[in-house]
Length: 140
Image 1 (cartoon, helix red, strand yellow):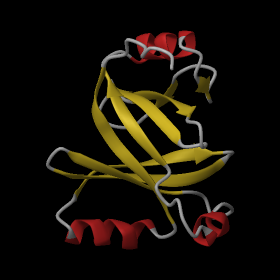
Image 2 (image 1 turned 180 degrees about the vertical axis):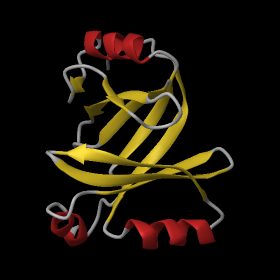
Image 3 (image 1 turned 45 degrees about the vertical axis):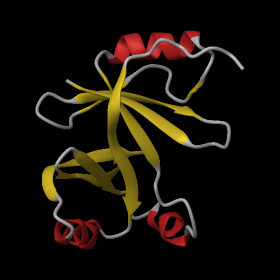
């Protein structure tokens, strides 16, 4: 087994869950004590989706509703509704360089900026041995 890379992962930042009805899902999680701390639209192949970050204590669940053209695939899933686990990192560019040097399968060609939170965030994803998606994310 290869040795571990030296990457400063601070914590699990959030867990991403694709949903088919963002309003109903946000209400469900609010009943569990989660509060909507951020809501933003996003672009997916020229169509608009919606993302809501639901927070309770130190836990964040990212609920996102893809555009209507993608919803049939989401609703047809039997298992695997958790889409990704995101790790919080202090420096996204450094994390990207370290992960790339470590030989991991990186999905994006560079960290991606999203206009989420107050000043935005940057992220990139890798895939694990069974196709699981692990996101590295820095809130700016």
